[in-house]
Image 1 (cartoon, one colour):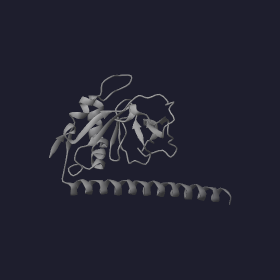
Image 2 (cartoon, one colour):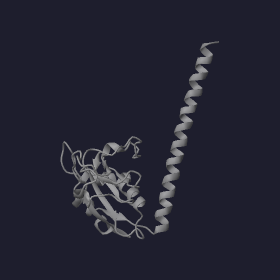
Image 3 (cartoon, one colour):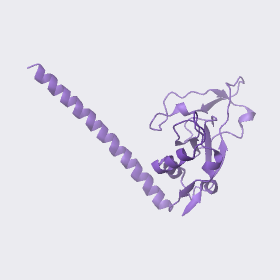
Image 4 (cartoon, helix red, strand yellow):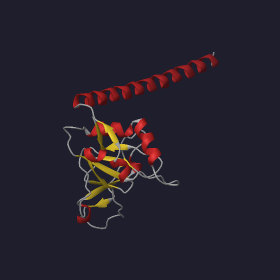
Length: 189
């Protein structure tokens, strides 16, 4: 079944905020720089704001998807609540799944990061110096929504694929170490 993103999730924009001067609880202000090139959290994320009433409608919930919608590298990440409380900066469009019994947040993240979807989003982006994916573009994006069982299977296969790639990379590193060690041994004979 195909569904529009607007039927799958509520969308709202991240906010622009300066460093907070209040003395409330620390709040993480998530920005694109908090993820590495593989879309993994960096380990040195620190809170940059303080709890304020003006942020109350913007706090993230575990399972929210953050789409980097400004800049040249569009990608979606899943907020897991690890850093919280947190708000998304204005470079993000936030998607909050309406019914997790129909669409798994991790599946929607996978769909949004799929190369075919990335091509569509890049082609639809506006602007030349700083490309932008508008909320309207995201809302009208069609998502193929299989059964929950298939979504889970796709996610498991994706995880296995990443694990296999990591193992291949480690094998290549070890082979290179062995190769150069052997060359050094030959040179020392």
